[in-house]
Length: 449
Ligand code: NCW
Ligand code: CA
Image 1 (cartoon, protein in one colour):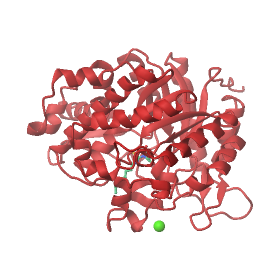
Image 2 (cartoon, rainbow, N blue to C red; image 1 turned 90 degrees about the vertical axis):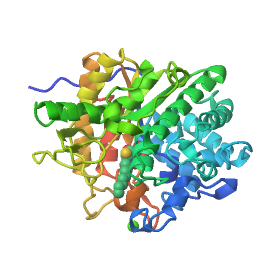
Image 3 (cartoon, rainbow, N blue to C red; image 1 turned 90 degrees about the horizontal axis):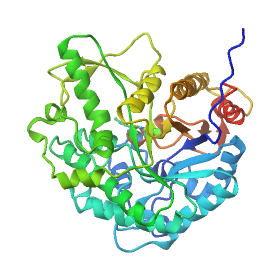
Image 4 (cartoon, helix red, strand yellow; image 1 turned 45 degrees about the vertical axis):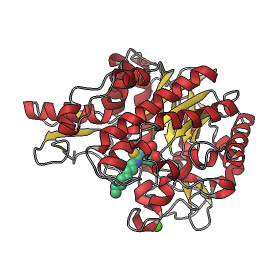
């Protein structure tokens, strides 16, 4: 018996994803203004081993050969982000032509190689000048973001079909304002829900701006980590709902339904603000797709001593874990995609990130680096996407995170997610087995799984 071969819909997008600060390097080149990540990484103690994005993959200078590399892998799409501070060095006001030119050349080269760009406007590198004005804590940021978005739309919407406002607003609010492990490094339960709300207002304002000038598709990218109760006790079930409201529904619900989950009151307590109806109206703009970043799940147990959620994640020892500590759980991707299908009216969905962080075994010899755990991860998760499609979820594309190993935020270069290995001394790019595997999956539209 051979298993029936898998085929994805015609016109399915197969891509890889990256972000500006993680791969570009040259963060201040050609008139760019510094970002909060530039500041944060240059603050001693903030990033592991003192790593910074000053050079990283040097993509800012190697973009041409990097696009050739993507073409050689057979990608039909590529998801990247624009550094706000390259386009508007002070965040608002003066446009830096050289910054826009860089992205325009990149888009043109991608298109000339048959690769559709999917452009993210914000993947965490807020201009430092705006942080000085309060950053995500200042309500005005919705206007600042729409101004920036508008500049980019006017220049590139004739060629870019897929736009994203924000990447993973939860990570910005939680890592940047609640726990302080990501830029700008605040740890304040009163700030986190404000930052989250202003992120969502910025999303809404940018979508609104897009409807005035844009002709194509715009969406929001959220990280979804499905939550499963550790037991059926009332306490564990309630803890699971809290965790899921905080991480997953806090962003999808206002964007798609126009309200915040009730459970946020239990999460934030006295720090839970009440927002004007007009804000929620702004946030709930019709969007063309939902972008889902999926890596792992969490099994949740109630724990009254744990700040701030009063719950903890129970490690599932029977399963493989990534170097980030994340459990490998492909069924969670099926569950997530079916949950979105059912809860939000089956919107078009792109898997905008999915991938694995493992140490690559040392290269013995030859041009290829073996990464069997990553191959296994990709095979199981892409198969999960196919299962969800067969059950009626409207999935339009899949982007592997990441094209190369890169600057993994507070972990610096210690964590590798790439299908292509990066030698940070020589900047040589070497394909891993996972890159070859993914290439075959694309070439056969899934049959090689
Ligand atoms: S949430 C997260 N990631 C990885 C990142 O490379 C990508 O930019 C994100 O969209 C892969 O997918 C998302 N990384 C979280 C980093 C948290 C670091 C916390 C450090 C604590 C010491
Ligand atoms: Ca290092």
